[in-house]
Length: 187
Image (cartoon, rainbow, N blue to C red):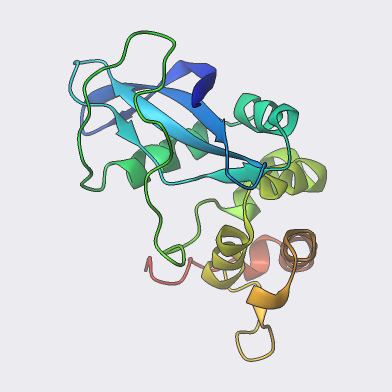
């Protein structure tokens, strides 16, 4: 059964509309916990949701993920959720509008966060924490999208989430701002 894990005090806005974000989750069929975000428009229009944002080994780790999302992450989630989706009525307070995350494509379209920005603001330890909240396809998209790996030499799909996290952090620390590039597909 889906439940709300965290409702964020700060509002996020897009196109003049304000949204309240909340992290929702449920236990998946394999026993792990998956999380997604719902964005409730202040104007009462249909609730938006993201695709699955994270998979965690247990409920406690999902609660930790839900409590640690910052404004930049929520703004990115809003942009992703604004893609045309099937609308749903506003649910009663404290109940998720959906029973699960939005369906996801086989592979993410692009990076969902900027590892350089997170490293600059919070350092390597916090960057690692944020990256560990993501699943391997999103980590691979970040590594590719920010050109942190050589596409010809890296078979990212074979790496574990921990290996991907360490490669991203190492590449960000090695490159710093001097080597920072615009994410592929966004220029």
